[in-house]
Image 1 (cartoon, rainbow, N blue to C red):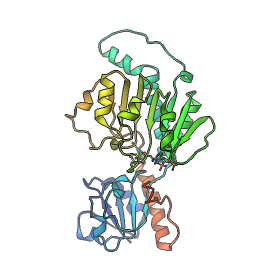
Image 2 (image 1 turned 90 degrees about the vertical axis):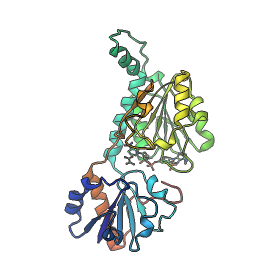
Image 3 (image 1 turned 90 degrees about the horizontal axis):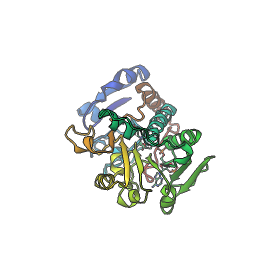
Length: 307
Ligand code: NDP
Ligand code: OXD
């Protein structure tokens, strides 16, 4: 079987040795090339629009990540299955990151770090976790794990999803009408939604200004979820306490982007949960075997739903 590694900016070489080891019979090609165009399977992160439509033998598009937004955004995407990565380790890593980010605000480490750079000793009032409600947007593989971890750490946790969920100890809300209720008392709002037409810009002025004064946001999903102008306005007005941002519409975030220096914003380099190459490739290899045998593929995305 011929496989093509496709990414707008290249950089998928880190998968090559793992693919050669896990798929010994496969021929691996790099896009852009005529040989890649002939491939039956496209292994992608951010394929340029039209690339997949120009592959006459294409039978499967496999994301190398949990998200498939960059793949589904191509209006010419051919009618073939699209699969993604689902990995327990990814959820665990996201749990660590979101727990840390919650503590960063809850224990006032954002303010303490600012004071420390000025050699200023000041002890802020400390609240127990039980007084810091957290809302997790998205209760899928990562969101559910994050919600349970924060619940176990003593935070009152609210969750929001498209369909109803029942998670013991988490107050779950579903559907667009329930968003205001889900976030009403959130001191920390964590976004773990997939990027779809329904969720693009969801963290805009209306949502962010509906948070209680002094709330903070943690964005680990996609940069396009956030209205950047709205967050800067609400940080400067003091309505928002801070924002930990891990994802951006343009990555890497350019070194001269003012967001790096915006008071209250902490930028991290899309690192909240990174799947190990070996784990990514094991899932792709399993789906190649299934494709060969005509068996149902794992982790297939619902293209109509957008995730
Ligand atoms: P899942 O597909 O497992 O879960 C998505 C969740 O979002 C589901 O609970 C779903 O609801 C909910 N959802 C989707 N659309 C809506 C909507 N319109 N309104 C309310 N809820 C909605 O995704 P994952 O948890 O695996 O990943 C989420 C995203 O996180 C990825 O798409 C990716 O963008 C990002 N990510 C970022 C990483 C990083 O390192 N920064 C690492 C991994 C993921 P329902 O349950 O009802 O279907
Ligand atoms: C993913 C990501 O989607 O890392 O896996 O953002």
